[in-house]
Length: 195
Image: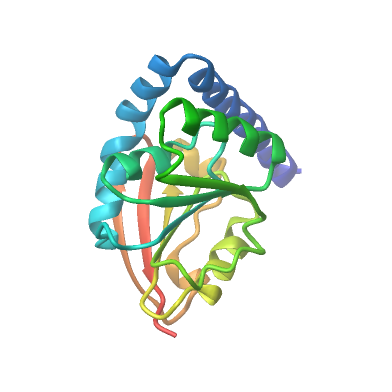
């Protein structure tokens, strides 16, 4: 019963996040503000932890209708491929990328995180809202090239009661990783593929 309630709350929260992101799509100024306040510093920190350089190939799994992670990474000079499993969400996010004139810096396509081959990427970002997150993370690591890195966000505080908290050693028992706590109830995790 407790797990059922947790899943329902998680789905409701995810729906609320999607509504917020749709609002970002409809009102570009709000989208820029939301991205700057809630994401830019966190993504800057994630980029630092992952040691990304402009020549690295980056994949973002679970980009959503307003692909904030990709937008923030592009603002830092990177090229990003973003995937989402919803055809409608991909269509909306393509419109956002076009509005911002970033079609040459962000490629968005429909794909399931459990089916994406990560071998050609240096760094893979996995969104907080992805389900089944543990399987997507494991698949990303298993298909990532040697030395590649996976970055994801773990919930802390109240969010940890709703979203699964996946520790790096649960996903890859012999991995090299780094953890950093950030604001808004999140913790950044970076796992380096050592296979």
